[in-house]
Structure formats: C-alpha cells, structure tokens
Image: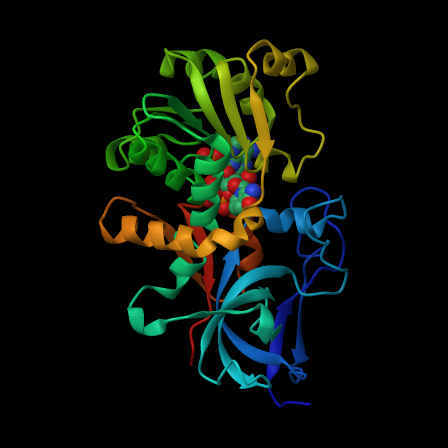
Length: 340
Ligand SMILES: NC(=O)c1ccc[n+]([C@@H]2O[C@H](COP(=O)([O-])OP(=O)(O)OC[C@H]3O[C@@H](n4cnc5c(N)ncnc54)[C@H](OP(=O)(O)O)[C@@H]3O)[C@@H](O)[C@H]2O)c1
C-alpha cells in the first residue's frame, strides 16, 4: 500500500434529478498500486460533461453505468507517477478515462499520450482539441452534412460543443442560427463568433415563431444538444430532406419525464423526408487523428474560437458540475488540480 491519499467523489446512490452531496459524497482512501500493464496518474485536469449525469443512472446507455461505490467517471489528463508498462514512462502526460479523484489507476493500453512541449494548454485536449471538438466536427459534418447556402440551427449554441458546431457551419458557407439561454451568450455568438442570428430561448416567448423568424428559408440542419421543447419547435421548421443530428438531450438528463416532441410533431419527419440520426463521438474513434489535425489548424489560424472555464480544486466539483444544467458555465468546464 502506498503512503499517498486519494480524495475521491464517488457514486453512493443513483440520483433522481440533480445529483446531491448524498448521491456523490467524498472520501479519502489510500492510493492503490498499479498492476501489470497499468499506470498511476496524478490527475491534472478533469473534464465535466453532461453525459456524466447519464452514467450516474442505470438506463441503457452507450457505456456501462458507473457502479455504486465507484469514483464518478470522467475523462482526465494526468501525469504518470508510477508505471508498470514499458510503453509509458513516469513523467509522461496522458489522457485517460479516470474519475473525480486526485489519482487514477489506468490501463496503459487505453491511454493517449499528450505532447507538453507543443505549448498548447493541456486542458484543450479535453475541449476543442479533444472529445468536445471532435463531437462538433463529426456530428456536424458526418451526421448533419451541411451544404453551402443551407441554414444550420444549433441549440446550446454558446456551449462547448454548440459554439464549435456553429463556427464550422459558418466555414461550410451556411447561414447559422443559435439558440442560447442568455442575452450575453447570444451577443457573444453574434458579435464574436459571427452567427447570423441568435435566439434567447428563455425570453423569446414562442420558440417556434422565433425560429421561423430567424430562419426565413427554413432549417436544413438542426444540431440538437437539448431535446425537449426546443426539439419540438425545431421539428416544425424543417425543410424537405433536412437532417437532424441528435448529439444530446440535456433538458432531459435530470428530468427524464420532461415534455418532448409529440407523435403529431414527429410526423414532420415523414412530411419532409427528414433524416434524424443520433451519434456518439466514439463512433468516429478511428478518425480522431484527422479531426484533431483539422481542429488544430483552425484554432492556430484564428478561425475557431473556444471558451473554457477552468475551476481550481476538487472541493467544488459537484456544484461546478451543476452549472452545466443551469447554464451558468461559459464554455467547456474543466477542473484543474495544480501540481504542488
Ligand atoms: N453525442 C456525443 O458524443 C456527445 C459528446 C459531448 C457532448 N454531447 C452533448 O452535447 C450537449 C452539449 O454538451 P457540452 O459539453 O457542450 O455542454 P455545454 O453546452 O457547454 O453546457 C451545457 C449547456 O446546455 C444548456 N442547457 C442546460 N439545460 C438546458 C435545458 N433544460 N434546456 C436547454 N438548454 C439547456 C445550457 O446553456 P444555455 O445557457 O444556453 O441554456 C448549458 O450551458 C449535451 O447534450 C451533451 O450531452 C454529446
């Protein structure tokens, strides 16, 4: 047993609604020793993603639920402090599946090594140059399949994924319309990211009417990050042969019974020969290198802007996670655990 102590936030009970401190308490446990083919990571960054809320439940999902008693699962970036693999050295910085914890034991075979010397902020590999950017890139281009001149509507548009989707759609020559939950977010989308029109869905009143007004030629691609009533409204505004890329339904994660599209509204899929397709970024894992290279080129060229909020320390991880659901996050949320 090691002398190091691992602070972990773990799943004690499956939440109903927003996870509480009773569902996700913390504990201090001795750090375990890595087994053959494993490494011990000192985590530097922990990614906070809406999907984690889904893994806390036990509904069928694209990966296994977090087991009761396990640390809450997250993508992490960490420095290798012990290695029992010939492929990974102590001191390497890697990205891995880890948890809401200071130390993670990871299989060396499942790690991606990161190049610290490139001068790119490491947190970007969880965001614009990692799963977030790749979700936007493949979800829009492969599932949404926008063409120049078409109208692309995106929800949670000022969020980590949505803001990248809108900028890539602009680069494809599309008219881009974003839905977001505050005037400040809308102003950022319009004035700094170049969105053609924006809708504050909290203050616009009739969302369907607002979409019709902002999209006078109809919607050809709807990139859906939220589901629920916004999806219902967007479906009413689709053009013939429109595509709906279902990326996530954040409005339902804490309220599985929240109102969503009625069967009557889903008839629009037939009426307009619409393709609706869900996806997870992992569907494109064999093409991640291509996606990261393109995203990096756009970032370096100043064509792709990205906002992240880096919050220091594990202590506030649960209230920080809640911010994804009240909309107070300004871009990609990351927890930083500075090295002493
Ligand atoms: N399919 C995949 O592989 C994949 C991968 C990554 C993420 N995702 C999904 O992509 C979506 C965005 O994730 P992200 O990481 O980029 O988070 P994010 O957009 O940076 O943060 C979440 C945002 O969702 C909005 N929101 C929260 N509750 C809402 C509600 N009830 N109705 C409408 N909007 C609501 C809030 O923005 P407002 O202030 O605008 O309300 C909040 O800031 C999520 O659905 C997530 O599950 C999917």
